[in-house]
Length: 100
Image 1 (cartoon, rainbow, N blue to C red):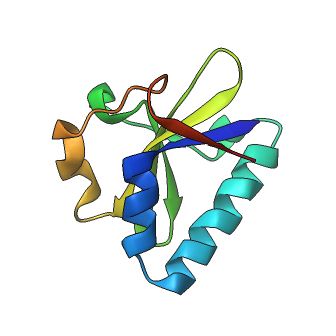
Image 2: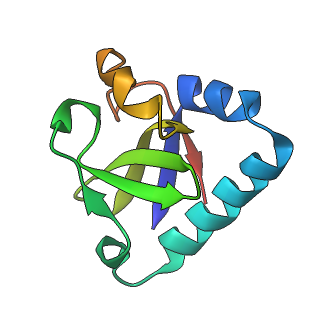
């Protein structure tokens, strides 16, 4: 699967500790390689900030999956802060940077 990030997500990831950045990158690559990534994802009740989430330690990755099998990352952050980001809505088709 292809993974895309918004510019603001990349900026948020760069603010994190280097070890956390490495763990998130490693896990995203692993999730993208899985045949059924929904086995590892949880659904989110507030779909304005994404339909699913991955858990990487104390950090959460909020995302949607497009029909063309693209994982669109909308937000990455600590679990205490990530769900407060519902005001930051990202459109997968605009300002996304491809990865993987």
